[in-house]
Amino acid sequence: MLECQDQGMPIDSGLLRSIQCLALAEWICQRYDAATIHVQAAKKLFPLANFGHPSDAFAREGIVNIDNLICIETGRLPEFPVMYDPGPLKRSRMALIREEVGAFAAGQMPPRRWLALWDPVSSEDSLADAVHPLLAPVLRDILDVLTVAKCVWRTPNATKRDADWMCKRARALVHRLLLLPANPFFGHKTISARKAEVLRIALLLILIRCTNRVAFRSARPNMRRLQHALNAIDKDWSSKTTSLGTEAEMTGSFQSQPQPPASPFSSYWSSPLNEPLGQPLRNLHSKQYNENALLLWALMTGHFNAQGEPEESWFLERAPYVAETHLGIHDYDGLDDFMSQYFYSRTRQQHSLTIVALHLS
Image (tube, one colour):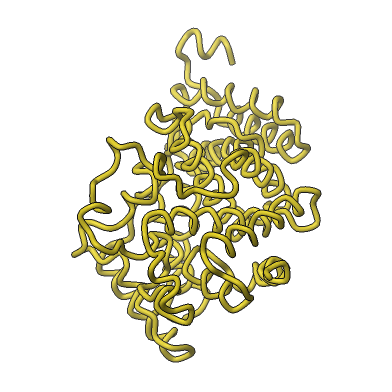
């Protein structure tokens, strides 16, 4: 291998596939350092490989995916940039999928106009007020993936191409989330950056827990990283002196709009402030409310992944406190209505939500 590298000789096609198998075996056995050594060796050979053959291209993609799996479980930065992002779905196809999902929802439940949240005609939204600018585009793309996922899983008209796009795009979004800490505009150790890190890990947990078959291994360490990121900022995000973005990152829309729009994590336009909680919370609908809403969502995501673990009590102490003290949520229905505005799987997270609701006064 070193001779090939030194002399610029093309490598044997079987070498890369052998390294892929070694890296995969070490990852399966949770020998992450050994797996990383194999990944780094393969990275050095990439410039010498001819990826014209499908099996070689498959080996390269497999090595990149193994690197991501290592990073998901260890918290390390990936060795590779994002290499297999299929990009956004065509607008015409995305519009058709939104119509199909909307029609399906209308036939089974009261219509919700959540699919209009990211309408292309709206060039501005509330993300700048609540979410770090580097996270905002990832958030938009996750919403598109979830829209396609609903089409694939719930309607008969999804195609194989839709399913392929959904899987590849989800993997690319995980890769982007893993790479964010390397960005110098993301990694400053300020309160703003710490809040952004909390949301990054929570989004990562949602993606890997709801879409990844090896989540039983990867969810636990990331839940603990979420707990660590929340340390000392785990009970109130509404400080007037701090925000999720620095002053330079803010767009000023909060000051210019008398009533900020719904949380950017909302999956449809209707808000818990409108019904059933009503007027008492409507007065709290402000940037401070939205920030504590994001905190509660992160704590609920943490509790979902901490069930049965020693850390469960930590999340269980804080989530009800934030819900009652800052958001005026006092019962199961209120908590369920709140979570339904966010990235939340009622099928998978209802048990966690029930446990938290039992601790509400």
